[in-house]
Image 1 (cartoon, rainbow, N blue to C red):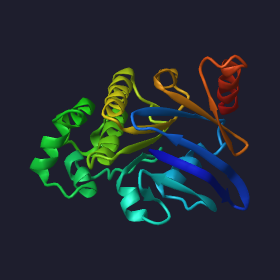
Image 2: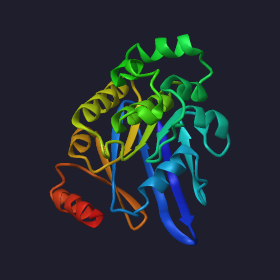
Image 3: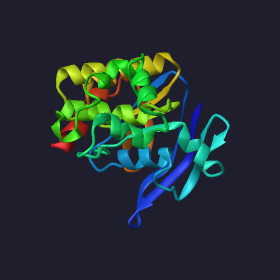
Image 4: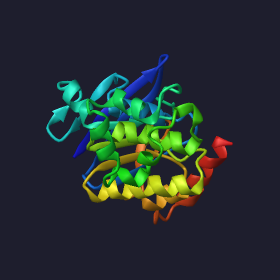
Length: 230
């Protein structure tokens, strides 16, 4: 279980996350909603151990981020909005940066379910600078999943993707959940929201849960988020 306890974080002396507290059971997809600049990326990076919180604690099962940072981080895959790939290298050479596996082991891993869903084995020899945007997104996601994390954090994973790439990545997310993985996705995509078991709303630094059947204006809140993005 992933547990966030009274997590607070500031950026440039401004409080971005205020005493966030929630927990996520294995086999759960959580959607993270909030207006642009509300702190969604900051919260994900704090959970991943990339940014150090001002206070609070994050634990995964018996591992504490503050006490066991190295072991804790090994259990996470964090897909940011930035492209982590090296354009001049092939797909397989990019993957070698992220795993101790050799070429044969990598090809066997990405050709076997569940990673085969992403289809990277079909273009592993292609240089990144010759890949489409969808291919790059698949490769970037494979690079963080190849070492089999327990938790997957995703920041707007479907931006600028065609329908085929969206479908394949969504299929992988559902497979990851069925295997008992924990997924937190910052997204406004309707397809993602429909797949979520729980939705959290981040507003003015505060995190609170929402339900799709919430009587008091879930749709209005979602519309407000989207209008603020425009």
